[in-house]
Amino acid sequence: MALTKEERRLRIKRRVRKIISGTAERPRMSVFRSNRQISVQLIDDGTGKTLVAMSSLDKEISEKKGTKTEQAVYVGTAVAEKAKSFGIVNVVFDRNGYLYHGRVKALADAARNGGLKF
Image (cartoon, rainbow, N blue to C red; front, top):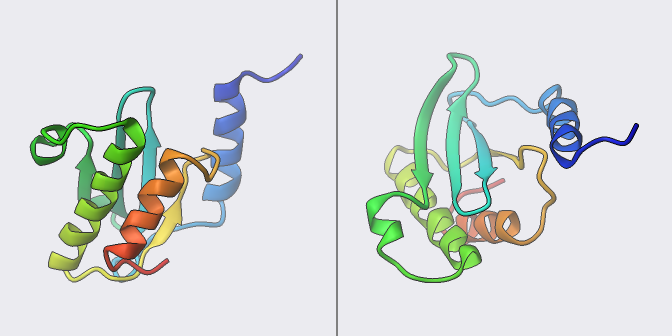
């Protein structure tokens, strides 16, 4: 029996998460993409705490109009600014089982341009 899209994504996610882990010095940048919104968290897996979180639902980002890809760019730049204010420069990118193109790639490129290194 064929896998559904969600089952396939969760398999990929589990396979990648066996290898990727975040620390306090280099947290994991986890991206979640729904049909309408996109959000990102910087997570310290050692303590299980979220250090920084941004979403397209946040007030300063939701006020900006644009396509979903443009919103992903806004989220990427905002999370980079917020992370730098907390002293975080290096991160480990976790695409969460999503393909690295479209909104996920736009968010990652914007975060890189904002000063994050991964």
